[in-house]
Figure 1 (cartoon, rainbow, N blue to C red):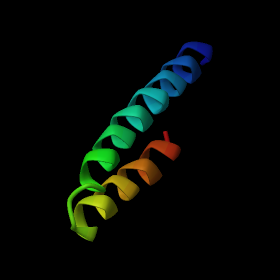
Figure 2 (cartoon, rainbow, N blue to C red; figure 1 turned 90 degrees about the horizontal axis):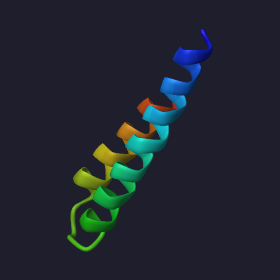
Figure 3 (cartoon, helix red, strand yellow; figure 1 turned 60 degrees about the vertical axis):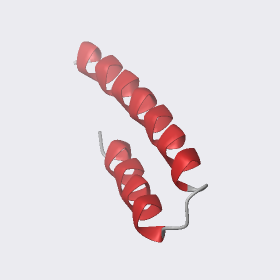
Figure 4 (cartoon, one colour; figure 1 turned 180 degrees about the horizontal axis):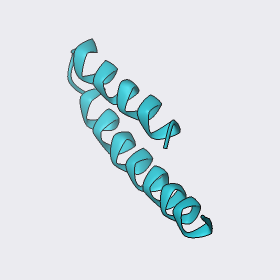
Length: 48
């Protein structure tokens, strides 16, 4: 159980960083769709 918790924490940390980079790229391009996709991805990682 502890291992799963650690793995989930790492996965969440990893995906948050990836999403942040993607958001930074998308924010330089006009398009709310791509930003909303990353927002949805961030919401999903919070459920992990």
